[in-house]
Image (cartoon, rainbow, N blue to C red; front, side):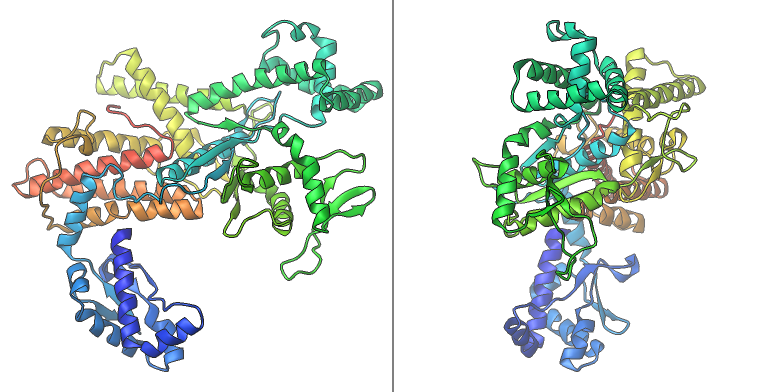
Length: 607
């Protein structure tokens, strides 16, 4: 529909310019363009699109909006290209122009998408600059917990959408693998498990988590240990081989455990931890000093922030170098931004950098982003974006924790989702009197259980907190992954029964779409229009970075399909209605499968 919308917008603009040449000339002199203000119709009864530009022109043209709309419509009526796209336009209210696409055009677009593996989603021009998506970012020697869930799942979905659009995407895992905490970890490791320095896999991540707690307790209570830990940081940063070996052990053991979870969730990430940027920290300080941004405050080197109007901000300054000469997280984040936007071979050459972290870090990134912009590291047209998300809460509305009050480990959360799904599936099979092999039960329970966790997260607006409920997310009704996965199975089964579908039940792998399609029922047209919105939704997610928009679209698509199938005969319909309705089934299955895939959710042939 975006392709058609662009054509419509062009024709509306042409009608505006020809009807009001004086307004067009004034706009050109001001360096702007007339705007027809074309958008989707607010209600189905108003057609497909609505142009509201007449209202904005009323004041400068000193004409009633309805008179302006009438002049535009008269110009459109004389344009044969417009007549090929739309039925005669209608003027509503004070001057809205309602536009309804020709039914034959919509039917032809359905046929085009059936033959298009991209389902009408146009790719961006090749050869563009990479987009960096920074997400997940666990810390070494700590287990991934529920707090990492949202960053990992949201970041992966956004990366998938951007990749589908054709952007080269750098999926970066900014792992916490550097800093003062390693001094105490290395010191503790040398004293408690010296065999780890010479024996592979002498400790696992569970040991490391315990080590971290023990080391932190000693650091807080033992002055001698605290002194040794600080000395160990200096050794590590200066390249001491034994300290480096300890550090590498900690990183390798943690990395293996992280990868088990990433593999389970089908998450691809390129690790580039904080340590990667260590060689660039001095250059950050030098750049900021050269730009006249650094101020010495209590021995620390800082950048004081500005308010939007250019006056001094009340926010705390960004500390770039501590009073002891050390660097902190802000320095590393500044080095990362500088590197990511720098042209190769000195950087990634990105033009869009996206950070997916919890909303609690919003002020940190606002400050760091401002410093990067004032330092001149963001190229013209470059985009630096923070994608914040809220907390995962329990059903009591409080931060999700175990009964013992500990943070929920991500592995345990995923295990429980699969176990609950397994139990639900076995109960359903018993009720239905079905016999299935263990391999089938395991595949369905694993797929649906993990999908339920992902979808429950992605289907809520990421900016808000959301309540984690296994009962809600595993339900076969409502806006849930099981509901959508079951819909894919059902629709693919209908397409198989009707013939002309591929082995997996999806249409694009089967015979070509029929030469022409015919739709007459309102339920058919409602489904057609929803299917043809897929490209617009993908572009909306690409721009606004809100995966819940795609979830809402897919859920509404399922509802419209079920209404269509329940109220309109498909397999028993006469031709040409039967073939046309089966085509809608195939396109619905393809669209759901593609949409869920962009959310990181695989589909099933049976459930």
